[in-house]
Length: 425
Image 1 (tube, rainbow, N blue to C red):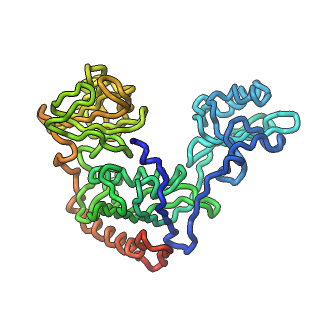
Image 2: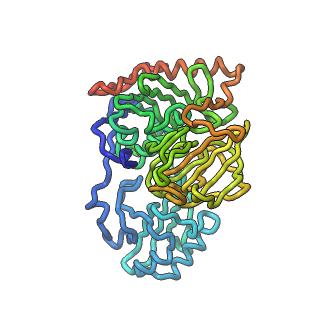
Image 3: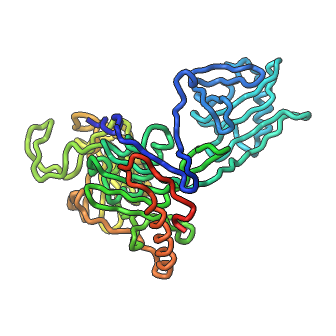
């Protein structure tokens, strides 16, 4: 229970460059490479645990401790040079802002004097420090990528994550795809074996190698025979996803407050309580998930209660527009406070088993005008559609994306065919 989202699927995921016939492949670094330690000291002193290839193709290490002093001490480097590094980085990027998990590289000479320091702030920028004649010189460098449209197709064997594949980028792509259709499809509770999806997504390349996915441009998801389509379109500089008629896929409420879990108890007028052993109404939905799983607010609103409340254990209650209210019970930890304003998708707590619970799960309730509503059947208002004045532009954009999508092969075809230059023009 609660682990099906992590099981291996036999389903293959394919992704192709829409402009070139070359297929894109991903490989996770081997455990042997990830545990390799110091290479030549004159090239780099690496003071973390995991080794992998950075964007330049040279070995680097993950930052496990965000304290640079620990790194210098463990590597037997002069702490006075750390002070000089900090001075050079003032106004560029503070060393106190280092984040665990980010790659870095320190280059030293034969006397263990620091010659250079490089730290990746995120996937898009890094700081580069070099020793000059008068001391260290620091700069922040923005990474330049080449963008190419790629397509990804897949068939659901067990769950969305397994169908797209392993690795950080594939996981993020799965989450982004589920976010687009989160108001129509409850992943994994609504998914069926054999469901299919196709999508066109931006691919970011550097030195001819794939680095990461960008925005999903258009997507098609067939769930239990029903076809859902989404088109990314910008209005006043803000991007959103719309269906073929220009209606927003966004709704006032997400369909569920957490991803990739299963339901143990649904909305019921009479349910046998697992602890009390009596029948009574169950005015919400119980989502089984591992303890610590993030729980998100399903809609914008204001927190009216955040604390411990009887059988609910740690509970958060949020008031929304149009008389709606949502409740999130049995939390292990609360990440908001009374009176706080929260946004749709914002993490407000974590799955737990506080209160009267037999195991880790989230008890979720939806109420309208103080009356309980089955959240899986409620009719939720949609977001704003494409303005009438922009509909011709949207229609042209949709037709262009449809032409590109028409050249994306179905997921059950063994060998994918890349789109030609003429497709989608």
